[in-house]
Image (cartoon, rainbow, N blue to C red):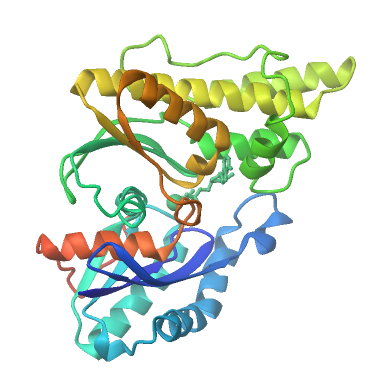
Length: 328
Ligand code: KG4
Ligand code: ZN
């Protein structure tokens, strides 16, 4: 079974074809990052307009690269939530029109379930149950993946997401949006002990995150240091990234204990981070856990993960109605 997937929840316009939820036949991603860099973050109306301009080309390229016609597609899947509503509407309406015209079933996919599914297209033998730490620009959640479609959120951020604070602190350090990649690179040469930053929420036994206080603490240190000797950017990158990674892994370890779990996955744009991957892998080895990370190309937003999850939603009988509409 071949699923055609669409992803337009933020600033990537993407279309992919995935077979039986596992084999990526094509995955075309048009990134709008350059358009948004001059605003220091995603400009929502511009994002919607770029999706409108690009979606036809991206769709045609995905079919061409797969060497398939629309007739040979079995199901059309699309990200329905969460995300920027104007951006989601473009993908939902395009997918709806296509499915209606081609008489194919339409399937709605939750963006975070899509991120979890990026692990299925990377690890062919991986099956639920497992826990998944989803860390992206918009979300930070620990999810109990009970089965392919039943996901229980065990903890989430009460304010900013991990990617969001990396981007915001990076912006103050003069790094271009999205700053997560640059922080990752700079941190490799920095001293993570140079600046003392808090590890918010690690002492509480619940599984929620709070990154906004950590962001403010870092911004205060940057401001104070600028008045004195000036900030050492690699050292701040290493200190800040270190604090974010410590909090993420500490909460994941509490969740693993709570569920008596033996396997976990990472997912989302921030799981491309080298420190997070290295530490998570070392911790898993030490505790005897099995760990799974998506291939780098599937960490950020892409339609292959949406098509993969779409396959499992279809198998579970979750077919969307024609009045499908992104939720606010
Ligand atoms: O999953 P994603 O592409 O979009 C959302 O759903 O939000 O995640 C984007 C986020 C951005 O905040 C970006 O800075 C971050 O992922 N990111 C990274 C790295 N690569 C991307 N953060 C840390 N280290 C990286 N290597
Ligand atoms: Zn995402």
